[in-house]
Length: 387
Image (cartoon, rainbow, N blue to C red; front, top):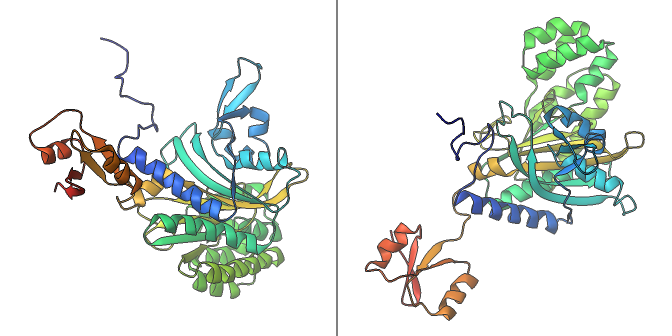
């Protein structure tokens, strides 16, 4: 018996994208990038691999356990395959574009590879489209990042769009104010991530009731803000609450149609974020959707850790977006019977049709169109649906 795997077998978390999904992905990427360009984000294209020490520096350190590494046969130095593109954009901003005017708006699209998937995202190769706003510390920058991501998704026709906002630095601010040790804070973080209120109260000591009420405050933005206002938050945590209010006020003006929820203690996946962070979903309620995360983003420190720049941005996931979209993105296909005039064919393509030219005569052109995956066949001057 041969030990060779079947030629269609792929490693766990890897998938072929077949017609029409591959074409739909290309259309999605083009439309997303067009929206980012329209908002002033200039496209950059980082390489698939970089030297390990640069790829995993700064914000990239959070991706160390997810990064494939290998020896570069040319330089004999360790290199890594990117597991996330945001650290690469931050590197470009700090080095190649270090002298460019701030705030700097950059966009990107590409594939990333990860050592392993997660329960939420089992795929190990993921398509990313994103934008980074570097050099702006004000709440208005957080508003722009969320609003632009929402506009890009809405332009695609994503239904029932929701954004869930979180404050990854809120719980650390409370832990610091109450003098919690590192081990206690880590255990508390795990309990909060699992939404285990009893464990939170048991671990947090004097801060237990405060953190329990924070845990229960998640929900629609207005209700969460009101719940936070009823809490006796320590100084740094009050500043986080004030910034959240400013961002929500800005969003109400910039994206009034966007449904916004807030989970003040959510932290999973935001380990390197330093402020307002967010996740987009399609459908569902209270920050959850049936298709999984469409994308996420938030505030972080870009560039040299010794002298970081304030930054915020987002990454959208093309695989999840494809699952959430209606099936109307790919242009309609029309079969051109043998001998169709090339002028008419060019006119159809110019009008947005995908034309499939027949290469041999057949007796039933409608049946042939159906066989070749065309919804229409050209009869005379006009495409006719084949049913």
